[in-house]
Length: 245
Image 1 (cartoon, one colour):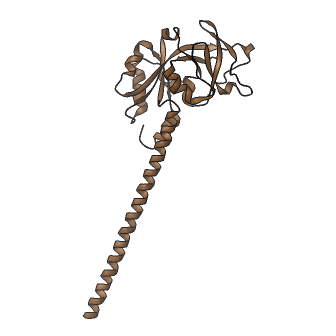
Image 2 (cartoon, helix red, strand yellow):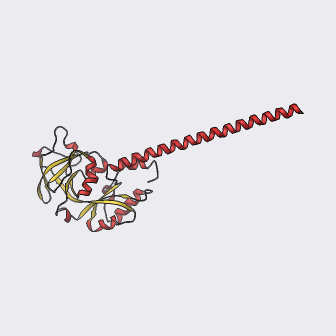
């Protein structure tokens, strides 16, 4: 019986040691998994905020919001922060100037105040500076492939007649979000009277973000919303891996 007891005791001790080792190994593995997930999530979050910084912290732009409804949209409890800039309408470039916009035959001109210029345009500048008055202009870089347009005078043919500008800055034109503001000047009395404005914003609650923004556009009477809502896709693609949007 003594031999049997000793064998049984050793067996139980061995099994206990293996059990403890298994538990210890599982605890280490779980800790490593959690640490990896936390590190991965933290890295994604950093990338999300880095992309967001390029667009002044804004997640979306709702274009052509009736001016009288813009204030109500911006005051909505879901909107964490926002910027507004005027839609000056579409224009054409005289062929004699040798300048075209490859994205469209009739680009759109917008006017921003200094806050919007600093937050939305400045992070995307490739050269030059932001406009200081309504006679200065930022143009997208894809117009200046071989020689710089900085300092050059351009005449834009608008619905209100020809307007002459001096190019003071070039902006990275391939950022998808920047499709809402490729041609930019500074605010003037004319921009204060435009019937529609563009509203850039970010939401407090990120879940179902796209449906929330679509609802804001509907409330503001924006049609068609499919083409008048532009999202910061670079940032939201990263964020979608962190939380449903």
